[in-house]
Image 1 (cartoon, rainbow, N blue to C red):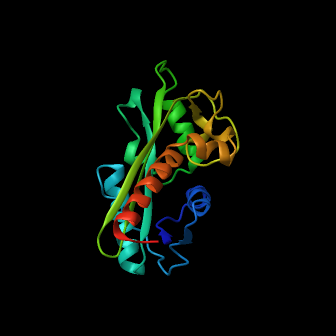
Image 2: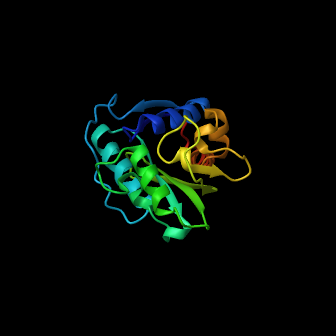
Image 3: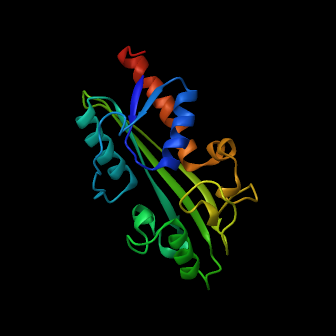
Length: 200
């Protein structure tokens, strides 16, 4: 099946293509499919934002579109930054700036439990929706570690690994990450959808 990935995030595209293409699907980026716009993320949840993005790209391209909305939820901050993860601290900050702000905000906090959440939504031209969600639990480090990944990866210590998300190889990350978990569940649900509808 041919999908359009509704994202301009190169790190996210690399991770999602690695999993989807391994599962036998053809993947094109939204720019390759002729969509160059930005979809305003006005949803209150990761699912709502992913649905907004996937539906907009599907309507623009006529192809099944898959979108991911994900973010970091920190317990001590009441679940923030959540759906505002990439806008945490305002639009003027880059990844390093957001990480620095998060570490400063948690400077005197001992309870550092956190989780990454990923919601994946695929919208088909007939209006059908296939979705899944994945979680990766961990805690916030005191300082960044590692040079891989993107976003909050350098400050997120993955439970059970002793490594930050940015210290994992792409293969290791896909095996434990919120997006990897969501994609595996998505693939299962996609296969069920294809079987039910005679698609292949």
